Amino acid sequence: MWPLLEDLSLYMTDITVRGLRLMLNKSNWPNLKVLNVSWNKIGDEGLEVLASGKWPLLEDLNLVVTNITAAGLELIIDKSDWPNLKKLNVAQNNIGNKGLEVLMSRNWPLLEALNLSQTNITAQGLKLVMDKQNWPDLKRLDVSGNQIGDEGLEALVCGKWPFIEDLSLEGTNITAKGIKFMIDDSNWLNLKILNVAKNKIGDKGLEILSSGKWPLLEDLILYDTQIKTQDLKSVISKFNWPNLKKVRIASCDNIIDIKNLRNEDKV
Picture 1 (cartoon, rainbow, N blue to C red):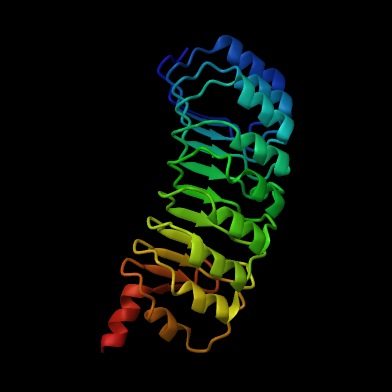
Picture 2 (picture 1 turned 45 degrees about the vertical axis):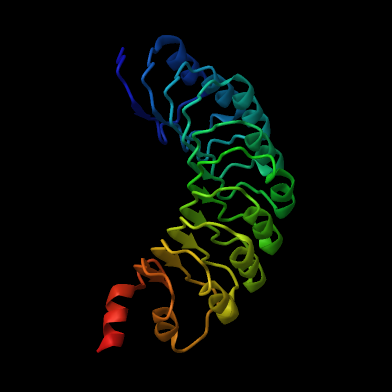
């Protein structure tokens, strides 16, 4: 049935491991490219079932809130054959540093987007695996909600990702010190979106950020960062990022339009 199926979403359908087995036994979807099983408690056993799927064209796998652990990831690494995987989302699962190590051991040469938000990884885990990852084309990385701190950000900077465009560090316990590591040692010339919200970077961190060499930066997210300067618009208007379009300073609804701000300065 549906031999041309390319995109399947089972989001929040209460599917079980038994259901997954039935699906794989009776389906024939050689063209499947996108699979979303998020918000279903399939666990590691369900992940093992998925790993047997014959989907050579699979590009996008969403496993958000599926109760998987590092053990399940080991199964998917060992048994799956998805050479075209480009997007992997394992957010809000307790995979920890062991799960991160397992993921980093897999060679997905086309991987472009990895979501590790709220997965209980730490600075120690990042330090151990950064030199092992083999994803040269990574463009989007989300480590938000993990308490990696400045030490973890320093480790991230060591990642060889020359094409990174979108980096989320929201709520990762970084400070101005970590921002300085990022400014001094990173080589992310293609960065377009940077999210450092919900971190205590303060005015000093903002000042350090402003020296970042990101010529393509378009969107800077700064809300809940303990920035206290009274003349924030004046500071932002001097940012040397010609493509900057938005700076979010208080919430998702409080956005400074950079184009309009620069026009105001010219009046």
